[in-house]
Image (tube, rainbow, N blue to C red; front, side, top):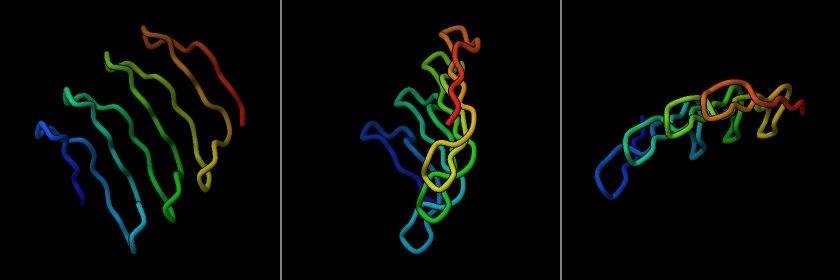
Length: 89
């Protein structure tokens, strides 16, 4: 498990590498410690469900990647965390 830190010392990201490529689940954090984004990699490319979060912790958007490209339905949310738009790729 790799861990990256902000200069301030707070955790910035966690995840794994294999043969120099990002693999499996990763998490990114804001400097204030709140979760910013989660997602997975396969063969060094984004793959699977990805979620991003607003500063207030509510969802920002979510959707699926297949071999590094957006796929299927992606959902976006307003500041209150309510579904605001959907887009299909």
